[in-house]
Picture 1 (tube, rainbow, N blue to C red):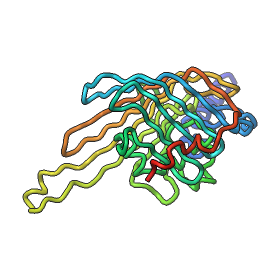
Picture 2: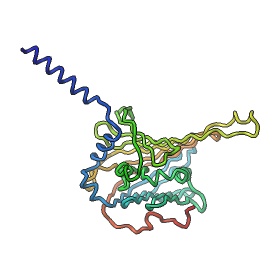
Picture 3: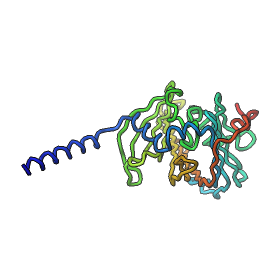
Picture 4: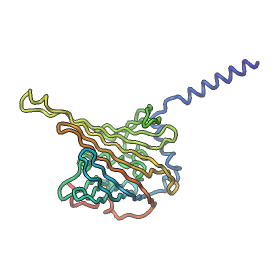
Length: 283
């Protein structure tokens, strides 16, 4: 009798382990991720959000002087804005936004945009779908997959910095030539990283022998999120970083933006111009 009880417990344990080890679908991961932010009621009641903090820009490849400044991220419904004011003469600001209809990327100086700005301008779906900034925006894409007509797939796992994470691929409406991959902590389902990769074909020379000297252009944009804390009933990241790397014929260029968010506010009213502050400058 005792042996039968042990065997039954062993079988039950195996069954439980099998369920635990069962692969989660991408949609299930997204649902658990949304729950990790806060209750459905609290998320629905949060109609707008703003966060401010310190910004540091490191020009990794060029080894220029580090730029310091402040960051503001704001959102209201489907609209979003991310802006920086910096102390660098050649890089005094960065602003990009979505006003609910169009994506906007401001000039850094006169008629010049940054490498990050040019990338976002040529891949507007990253702003229109509110992928950039993740849960820092009420317009966060995963909160409205149906409305945005986007698709998620995958659901496997890998390790980032020694921690197990779920891997989800994201496809915006109409598709994209940018591969978008999201990562979620396996235990908490918090959004910890998003990677955007784009490869452009090698250039073609005037003569066949010239073409062999051209390299593919590889662009990788990585967002990292951490230091999650409760703000107004929502679990939100207080550290946020962006790393932009481009490599090709002219070598490699890498820039990092690091943000520490210190103040949050919710359900405030914003002027419509908040989400398109430089309308006259846009293309």
